[in-house]
Image 1: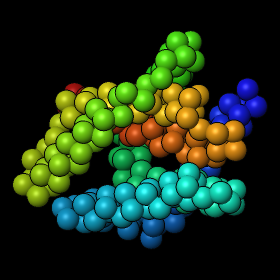
Image 2: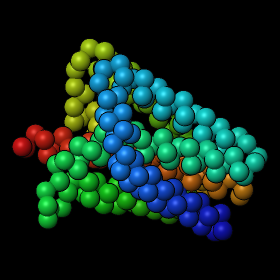
Image 3: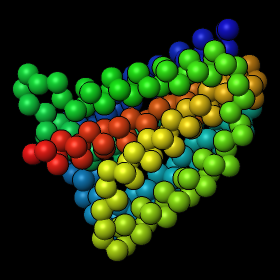
Image 4: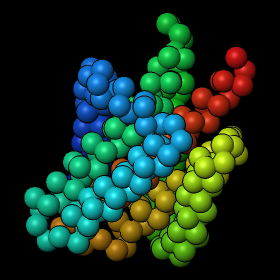
Length: 220
């Protein structure tokens, strides 16, 4: 129970840090303009490639190192990278927010945490080991990367169903990461466990927000 408390405390801390860093980024026009300039064509692929490299490096620091300071460095580095790559999507969501309305950003937050809580409850209540879905998740993410690259190079829109499929993959990733926390991680790896959960949570948030944006945009 102590391990679980530490893991979810660090997950909550990562979410709060994400909000703080995102807020700070939006106060600096140069950073916002840079992020927005990287959303077109090959620049977007370069940004995604850089994000994947940072993710891989952060995970190595948080999981493979025995130094607790490296664990925290990996988590903080990953949160900052997430905050940067989220700038364009949140920028669009903020533009579509009407005063006094329940914005798509707020809807995405509520839906994300509701689904995350439900998936977490499934793992804790069933005590099932979901490590068997790792291969399916890996294949799914490689297919998704291929579609993103193809869509960028050949100029076609991946659309609503791609985001729905990615939301399902993100949900599977939450099941997998939560299962790992229960069955795989050792007691001193609570920072690494929180990083895995945070990554899956933010992936889910990204595609729920994308789905709401697509639906709203289609209705305008």
